Image (tube, rainbow, N blue to C red; front, side):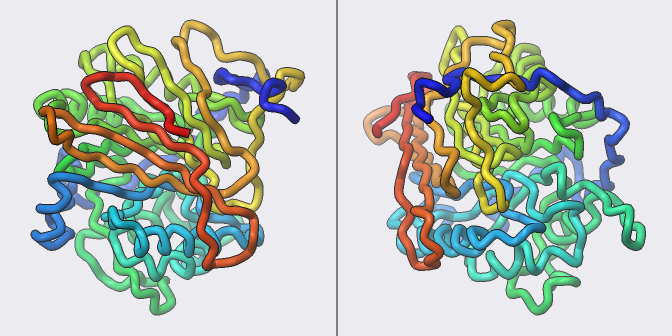
Amino acid sequence: MSNSEKYSIPVQLNSAVNDAHNFKVLPQPTGIYPYKLELSKLLPHEKIEKLRESMTFHLVGDTGSARHSPFQSVLAASINTHRIDSEDSPAFLYHLGDVVYNHGEASEYFSQFLSHYDHYDAPIFAIPGNHDGDINPLVEPYESLEAFTHVFCSKEQTPIRFGQNSKRLTGTQPHVYWTLETPLARIIGLYGNINKHGMIDDEQKSWFKEELQRAKASVDKQALIICLHHAPYSSDSNHGSSTRMIELLDEAFQEIDILPDAVFSGHVHNYQRFVKHYPTKDVPYIVAGAGGYADLHQVAAHANPTVSPLATKYGKVELQSYCDTRFGFLALTIEKVVESDNLKLSGSYFALTGAFDSHEKPECVDHFSFVLKNGKVESNL
């Protein structure tokens, strides 16, 4: 199918199911309000000083798969090889959710996650996906996000109880929604619960707006990045766009009078780079959910009767690049612009060739960059 036969704008499903009753109560935070973690507390001082000039990190979502997927291990190895070989030396990996399918069970963490990322010798942060928070009714009862909280949100670093001697230690994120403070970026992570198109309660919504308000004090020094699992905009025919997430974000941006520099999500198992044209700047909305789950999701064709173009009231949004047939990951770089008091953000999406070779070098299939104050996104491919 040619690209001209596929949508170049976001779509939404024609049949939407009201699954609000599936919402799960969130676990208690393990850190103190406002749930902030400083990268400087986890990396050596020398490393942090280098990150004040340029910082690179990885982003990927939906790496788990209850069904057999050989691409899980191949992609994880490719990410690790990129970390080792890259001159930029990515400082950490930010996981966009769905670490473990289908029900976030502790017994699945080794086979679906730890065994693949045990050799990634840098911090791995995460927001939960809908599958991470779900509960398997056929096994001994456990709380929603119980295993996720232990792996990523423990009060101190310890061996993972069900890690089967994994070298990775538990993370110390303060909550399942939280903010990562880095020298060049403030990364706000949201949790959309287990609902198909996400659902965020009033408590988290209030926290999010307060975090945006706090971000206003450092917009000239830090890029503002939002991460959430459910994709606000998507052109795929499996999930489509989440109007709940669009409305949540735009309401908060308008009320606080601030716009992010980029928004990243997973949930949809492919790569899509959108640009939303706000009156004052362009904001990239990027889906990076092709992390290894057995099935990929395709960008919808115009002839597909299950989807329709997203309503125009949600703004002018364009799909500028996508990859829906290959697994891959993002590398994002934020750096100071030497000749001006500004920051530049650039990203590259690397896709596997399809060979089951853990030593393969993935191909860069999309590259974009923009100077934050200019507000215009450029593609270099």
